[in-house]
Image (cartoon, rainbow, N blue to C red):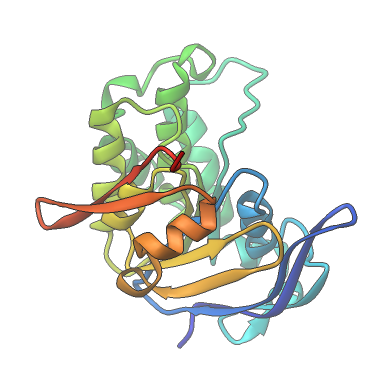
Length: 252
């Protein structure tokens, strides 16, 4: 069964059309990278796919039901959302922060602490279990946010810039471990093109002017398509069997 599908979706920011007529479907186990220039609508799209905000027009289907028809409690069982904006007004341990994702089990959660610990270990945060979440670095806090979403144990995970603020080691670690998850579908907005190609099975390109392109990575993430998308010359160089993308100076 299709996990999630968009049909003729339009996204707007004020009077500006970001995406027009977006139609694509996510199948079980697929990993999608959402790519595009600043202001193209990547974060807006993830909010729409999560049910946080409605599209300007069109429909989003989660499983066999319209996204808008899902009750909040049941929706929390189907999808998790990671943003790069956190509000931590009160002291709380990292583990307790992750365990907020387990509230959807409504007290029927004998393995919540175990799942929380495992999710933190997956994101290289096991040493932070008892740390005050307010005093983490931005990179550490983003990995805790990803761990929280994973602890929610949903078949669909939406991630807005999951490698934001990460050092090179953790950029690779986060994406490699997300890519190794079994039985989950992932949709992540990314700015790093090489990371997107390493992580994703499929890509969705948004140009911010209404246009879009969706499909398997090999078909969508070509140097020609990316050059057009970002309006700057981009070369795809083979490195360790994978493409590595480099932005080139524009011709004089």
